Length: 325
Image (cartoon, rainbow, N blue to C red):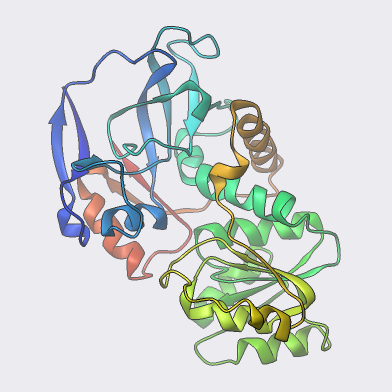
């Protein structure tokens, strides 16, 4: 028997329960992983609340973890029992002692990266990889805006942008988070609780604004983000921490400078085993080189997943959080 977190109805963290289950032999093409660490992410709260619909209820939760292959299904040749692996894609169910998922969703984990670091960094790190290297290929000297720069994704983006030679302006909610973002590599910070973000961007860029804005906040920052973009700039809306952006009038893009908008997801970039491994290899190389450091600030037992999500949603966490089975 093994234990996992599941939920039978949508709602707050209180709907999460710890249950026992009997792991089955993995299906053809699948791998069963014994998790050593599990990643905690905002997207988990979207599935729990019902913003994103899981396939069916009751449902497991979580899409990110790292551990050791325990068993492989028929037709799997890339992995064998005992291999170190990590993952950041579905199906839901990573909040578990063991998790079965398609072999195509797994990546090989080098000895140079720990299970905890991999679980903490896979989803956020692959997200930063596609944001900075694929959605918009950030160039040396570019001034870019990144919201929530002291959070899990932002903390990695600050470091990666610095390694690329770019100047990242990070928005934060407090002086403490401003210090953190700067220590991680942000070129400048804007405290949105006391400063006008668009005005400060104008000042910091000598009136030119930014070629790209990365916005994982969503509803609350949508219009501000558009006001920070240079003509024909790219708005990258990749998350909904404050709620989904809706009711968009495309005319506003014309008014504000023939802007571009994209709503990317990791699944569209890490869309096969080869692409996912290549993205992960670049991420792991950045970690091995020391240019990107994984900052795990919170660790919770798997059984306390609800409390971990409460802290995350209340913005009382910094850096990354992992659940330990």
